[in-house]
Length: 254
Ligand code: MG
Image (tube, rainbow, N blue to C red):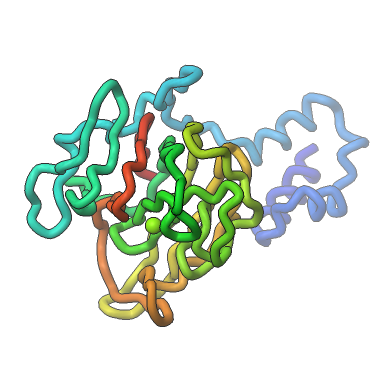
């Protein structure tokens, strides 16, 4: 047994800790069960992770509830957010302008549910009930009625706007609640130098539409995206002139 342990530890110390390599190095079948358990314990991690209460249909216990107007302000003026919050539903007030969270965020998990109006008469493409969530105020995940509404695919619902099209179109009909679950890794900078781009994963109505997608830089309507260095920044919701509604809006800092 001692000889086998020395063999295992030397393999681990050599940085060859994969089970495949260990299996090649040592024939565990010749060991007793007790000996195998002792060796198995070498690769166990017993440092416990935080406990989060995750009740069905509720925000996790460590989430920040953003469905609260006191958490938001008008972009630019920093005046109180002029959107409407009624019966747990936050709605864009067209003309009131974009709103931003008072809190700045870096890496996050974001959950949001959104609904576009059923009034689509005369509205096509990007004009059919548009909004968006800007991660760190700069990188837009598009919110749009993309149900039977062709537009450029890197501008439809679930796109990283003008950068990456969603993998599929998982849109529901106007008037129905839809969800985004977003996992966002912020870009890293050393001074003004980009050391790691941002990455975003998006599930639209539970369907994967962005799979660890690299963010190419600031969202631009015209021209190519590029990065400018920044630290943690607010989340921003877009007033594109349409009364899009939001509910169950929460974020977890990662
Ligand atoms: Mg938009």
